[in-house]
Length: 308
Image (cartoon, rainbow, N blue to C red; front, side, top):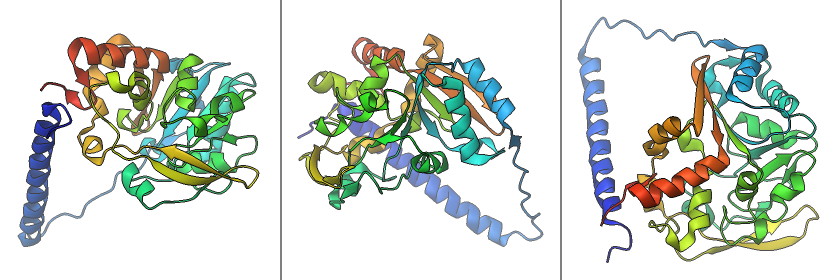
């Protein structure tokens, strides 16, 4: 029996058909190209150089300022060759928000399906667990002054005078994005979401609205049952954290770009071209409110327009 809106199953079938078509097309192209002779060699375009003055100007234009609380999602290689690398970007953002500001980084120890990761029954050690969220987060983990939340799948690293307020209670929540999570604290703090070289599909704060709405949200985003994962805290003590995992079927039909037009129209998302990519800024609170409104007034979600 279907336990999801019927539209998700239709969407899944369409995506599977499109994926099958694209794989077939790529295979056919490889066969055709192999039979052609005298093909010109591929020429790689030079990556643009992005310096900190350019990036600073862009961040100021997007509204990042002193005292802000911001979570940073990044794929810095997508904007070009960044002068100074992750260290320079890390220091730039902290300099802009200043001593009173807060900078958060998603330092998730996995980069595949949540269900598959937790199904391996990992042990999460807050002191040593790696980040699979890109070079900037890897650098941030090594930087002094950060405080990391204890959560087996969606750990967040925070810098700033009230960093503990953002991350200290994460392990006490029943869901990764619930009331005591860093994602909820960011909304409460009128925070921002900074995208460097990545788009909406890298923005995990979408799930904050789902966890806040709970059973009111029409898509059952989590599978069953919950996992109980051993976690090692900062003192070397073991705490068991209970968390559900996102349903792989639902995850595969998710596309956050389905609400991109609405985000831009409402001013929730602002973007600028930088190098070979873009940087963007999202108002976390406005995003949360808009997602709820789109869901209940227009049945529009990141899982498609819902019906059935």
